[in-house]
Image 1 (cartoon, one colour):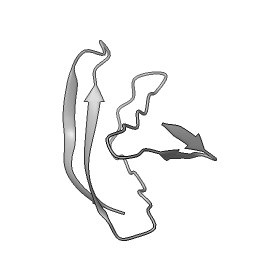
Image 2: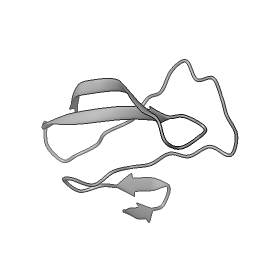
Image 3: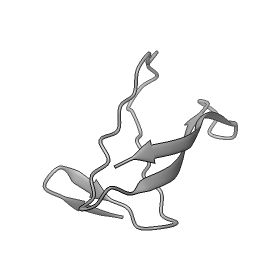
Image 4: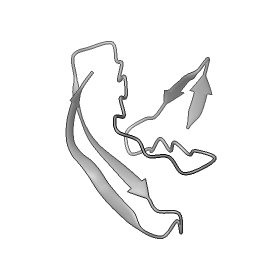
Length: 65
């Protein structure tokens, strides 16, 4: 994963991990996906509990760039 001027680049098969310094209750998460064409991408969004052992899929579907 590479970080360029506040943007994150992830190629096919790579992951983007967002970690917070403390626990938060989050109601809305938005990801801006940008590409140079009109492609559609399959994505998964997961949460991980404080024990860092339990993952829960909260979104599994398509995103349009």
